[in-house]
Length: 284
Image (cartoon, rainbow, N blue to C red):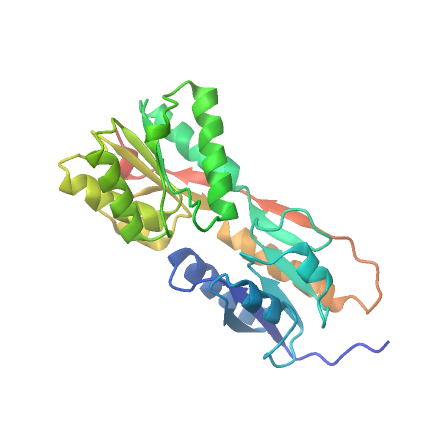
C-alpha cells in the first residue's frame, strides 16, 4: 500500500464555537498547527450524532492528513466502522476506552478540586449548578461525580436541594438555575458551576438577590476561559493545561501521519493537568 500524498490540512470537529472554551481551544489549535506547517479545517457539529459520523468518515470534506475530533455523541462502534480510516485523535472524555488515541483532562478531578477549594475557604453548603439530565453530557456527568466525591470526602453538606439542573451550559441557564435555588430558599455559601459560562450567569443572579460574592456566597467555575478574569468579581476557575492539551493532540496526530500504512503504532491515552486559579470570587 502506498502512502497517500500529504495535503498539509487537518480536520477539526468541534461541537460549538459559541462556547468560549471550544472557541479558545480551536484558536489555540489553529495557531499551534500553523507553527507546524499545518492548516486546520474546522467542522462545527453541534454535538449531532449524524454530523459527527459524517466528519469521522470524511463526508463533505476535502482530502486531509488526519482528524482531531471532539465528540459528543460518537461511539466506538461508529469509529471502528469509519469508511475512510486515517490518523485520528479524540479530544475530551466522551469516549474514554477505545482503540484510538485520545487526549483529555480529568473532569472528575477538576470538579473535586473546585469543591475542595470552596471547603478550604470555609464553605459548608456548596451547591452544584450543572447536571443536564435532559441532554446528558459526559463532561458534566463527570464533573458532578467529582463534586459528589468531594462532598462525601470533606464532610460538607450532602443535600439534594443544593443541586440545580441546566438545559445548556450558558450564562442564561446559570442565571436561571441560581435564581431558582434562591427562590426555593436553599441555604448555600458556595457554588461550583459545571463551566465558566454557567458561572457567568450565576454571578449576576447572586448580585440581583443581594448576595455578596465572595462574602456570602463563593463561586468557582471550570475551564478558565479568558472572560473569567474580567467578571465582577473576577472568577476563580479550574484551569486545564490547554497548551499541553493542544500540543499533545497535534504531536500524537503527527506521529500517526508519519507512520507508514500498516505500521504498528501504540495507542496513547493522555491526561493533562488542571489546577485551581484563585481569584476574587473566592477570596474570603
